Image (cartoon, rainbow, N blue to C red; front, side):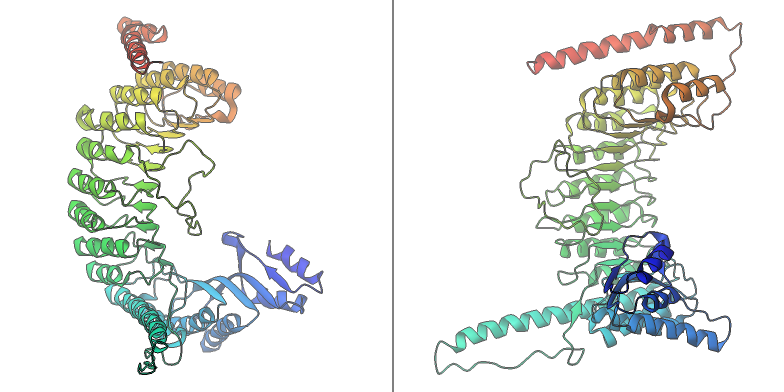
Amino acid sequence: KRGDILDLARESPQLRELRCCALGDNGKWSVRDVDAAFERCPSLTLFECDVGVKIDSLNGEERYEESLGDVRYVLGDRRMRIRRVKIHSGCADSAHVVFECAARAARAGRLRSADASWSLKLGCGAARGCAAMMEKHGGGWPLQRLAMRKANIKDPGAMSLAGAIRRAADAVAAKDKEAKRKEWSGRYEGRGEGHVGVDSIAESPYGDVDPVCELRWLDLGSNHVNDPGAAALGDALGPNVPMTRLNLRDNHVGVLGCRSIGLGVVRCGATLRRLDLAHNGFGCQGAVALAGALAAAHSPCALKVLQLGFNSIGADGAKALAAALTSGNFSRLEHLDLACNVLGPDGVAALAPLLDPIHTDDLDESDEADDGASSSDKSDEKRGAGLYSLDLAVNNAGGDCERGGIRALMKALERNTSLRMLNLRGNDLTPEHAGDVAEMLCENVTLTQLNVGYNKIYNEGAWELAEALSENPSLLGLDIQRNEISDDGAEWIRGLLAANSIIEEVDMRSNQLSPEVVESFGKSFGERVNARWQQEPPKVEKNDENMAAQRTMVGEGGGRVAAKKAERAARKAARRAARGR
């Protein structure tokens, strides 16, 4: 806590450096806190922290000027090293002052990130001010990270930012070209007396200041950026922009924007690791345009996270994306989010090649992880190259009881050793689909998290999964929420947890378990079962002989369940025999 750190500073009269990093959302220091730290410990020569500044424009001119004075003070103090400055302001004019100070501090190496998110009144004026101040006082783009989420930015503001980024990158490229030309001129100049060297220096558009372009993160999520703004941002990306993360989720990016951003990803292939275009609604046409641009890559790209959820992407878009991502240049991709689209069975089947084993020796294990893009466990020796997580929630993969999509995906997963997390939540899956998933779990011994919640697998599907997982050595978490599983199905889960100690949690919320079963789960397995918030159990008439007979058959493992069990055992024995086990 900040109070504890201030007490430490007061009790350390000879302290010279104080670095307060990774303190979470509550770790931002106010200007008053910074003052207190220097007051309690005058020996400090370097103080590194996150700073939050509120520009008060509602309580008179005097308070407004005082707020701006706080910004100038904290960003201008040479003893400060600010990881992130969070700006709370509803005045676009104040943004010019803030970004002027930020540009100067970033140029001097005292500031890395500026965050002006959730300031709805800033708008395009603030974005234009940011772009102008970066060029005028920063000599290009000295800021490493810029976040302006939910700031009411439209195309003009996005285009201003894009223009500043592109000019900075072009200036850096011109400087590097001139440096190389001078180097070669010097070499040739020494070869003979008659050779005349060229001493001219490329003129910088920023005066006597060497141009820089340090932008790594750009977050413009939840704004009003349409195709023109998105296309301008995509066109600004290039090899001289060291971008690692681009967020344009929840805007209005269309086909042209998708194509431009895709080409930008290819040009920034050596650095860009995370792209978020979710919640844009560009449909199949946008997905096809993005895929076509990605397919233009001629060398391996560093992209690790691709988020495309909530975009109305159908089967055609899925096929195009799968073709582009399996071209050989995106083998570093680890996380693919296609949740809440309209893939259908055909689209899900088209994604199956993404799960085929990847055999490559050119992966660079020394990739930087400073952007947090990769969450895979590097100590997992069994994990091969390829996807780590795949999110296909709410895509109607089992629509009309069609099994082709799920079956194709599961067949690919049987041979896969890289995927650890699979989300099939809300896909209209039936007990037959659960059987296909169970078949995969009999072969796959590397998947650790499986979500089949909010489907229709019922008790029979619960039996299928429980039977397959009883000997599975890898799965840690199973989500079967809201599948209308009753007490009969719960008994299969009870047997699973008793037989397999590897499983750490089964989520059975919002099913149809009786209070007695819920209580017994808690007593027997504790936190390994989450069975809260149950729906009303199904009503079964005492004189319904057919239902009673069916429940007895399931409980004793007879009827269809026994047939499936025998069939699976025969197939498993045949596979083992074929492999010479």
